[in-house]
Amino acid sequence: MELQNAVILKMIEFNKGDPKRIQHFLKVYEFTHLIALNEGMEKNIRDTLEIASIVHDIAIVPCEKKYGHCNGKIQEEEGPAYARELLKDFSEISQNMLERICYLIAHHHTYTDVDGLDYRILLEADFLVNAFEDELPQKAILNAREKIFETKTGTDLLNTMYSLT
Image: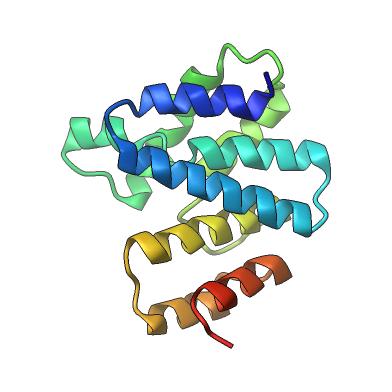
């Protein structure tokens, strides 16, 4: 079984009973995959990014139980530990890969000091999904286009989905 598929199945089990969270990460994963392919990302970097996109919101369910809420900062702080636990049995995930996955999780709500195309694509893919799920107003979407989006593919998807051009 392909690594991404195995991680997806494990995340579905992790989020058992919460179809909203499952639907969210599946959509983010698919947009991440699409943008990364169209931007010509190398396979090893793309694999790391795709795993990060699957587990990027892993802290939401346990933190909602623990604190009664889970904002972006809490997700960034607590997400890496949950991801390490979920991914520990995947021998295909090297230590370097795991560290980058955890870094991306720990920054997926931070829009400054973006240090790589993988990070940028995760921000863009997550925003594409959140804009729809949160029913953001067009003004917020336009603002995000200016401040978050840098890839041609991500920008084209945003423009097309929200008829911005």
